Amino acid sequence: MEEVRNINNKRICDISKDKKVIEICLKDCLTIITANPDGTLNVIHHDRKATA
Image (tube, rainbow, N blue to C red; front, side, top):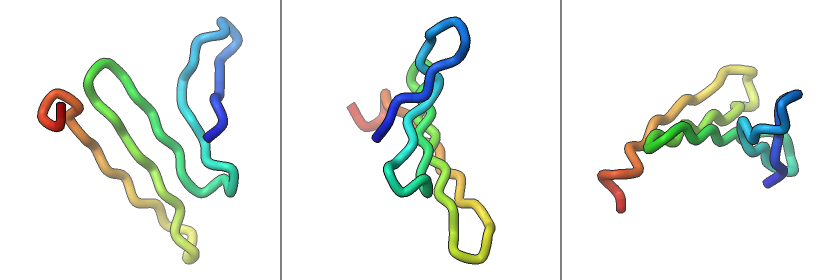
């Protein structure tokens, strides 16, 4: 995974080497966005408190 930072140098997400998966973590919520071959997206939300 490669870090993506905004102009204020804050980490906003991680993107996979193949550019098909993005992970966004805000507080205790992890959002995973996956690109499908047909151009649609899967969006999954995880509560990190529940899995810890």
